[in-house]
Length: 322
Ligand code: FAD
Image (tube, rainbow, N blue to C red; front, side, top):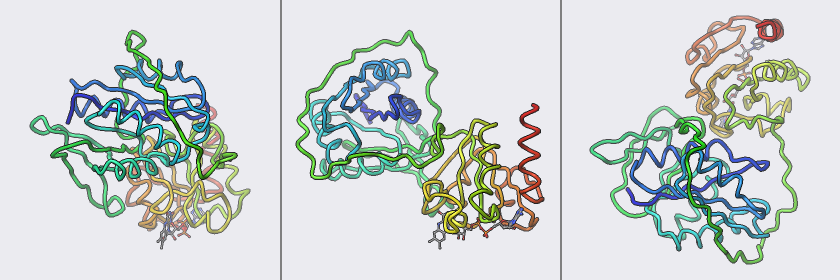
């Protein structure tokens, strides 16, 4: 692709999101010889985070600071990034396939009249050329894409490409880029986080997900306890969200979040195709369901046929002892 690859980093609560490091590793995989330049936008100093970017593989980092970048907005961030892109003229731009990545990269690609390969889950090298693999038809098939020419944006699905080993001996320049971010038409006053505290669902290594079988909002409590013991996050099927047992921000599936944790525990979820579209690429799937014929068992690595109200508390107790 490339002499220079730009990686757009993302921070949350002052810390770089892990997908940023996965994007750096993706850039190195695309072209080991390319210079990998990280970009961080914020209203605050980001020198500490920039250093962390370098420890995780970026060759240098550009920080962009402006009052209008306090909260994410497509308008503000695209203005800031256009300045960086025009100054740097990269050969490729990589970002996480996160809410911001999904919003920002098509906008920038359209402005620059260039291409976008989104939701990449793997990158192979074939005859020195990067081949991008992405799921299509709700994960039922995979598409392979290559770039023939010109600048292209790539978004990578969190939790699929391993990050590089963090190494404090890595060094690189951190430079500040002046930008003019004009007053925004839309001003975001506040961002209310609705997902469970601590672990972000789309980047969680362990997810305990509840279906309609949990029967009530209180029925989700044992799932939170299990998730806590495992250091994971809680997700849900649309059945559970539609029944108002939990917030839609927890929904996993075709019309919810797409997740790829190391461990996905489906609790009282039937395994409808729309749900599988969001979780079937999880590394290990455990299903708990009282119906041995439930479709979820067709994708599960381990299945427990039983009542969730008995199995989940027992599992939590056992894990607490372990
Ligand atoms: P159910 O299908 O009701 O399954 C409940 C399961 O729990 C059953 O298998 C039952 O055997 C088991 N069970 C019941 N009681 C117990 C118990 N005590 N112990 C153990 N097991 C028990 N769904 C999503 O999840 N995500 C999406 O993004 C999504 N997008 C959609 C988009 C479209 C356009 C459409 C049409 C549908 C979409 N759906 C989505 C809905 C999907 O088709 C299913 O209706 C939904 O996933 C069902 O949720 P569920 O498995 O929790 O509920």
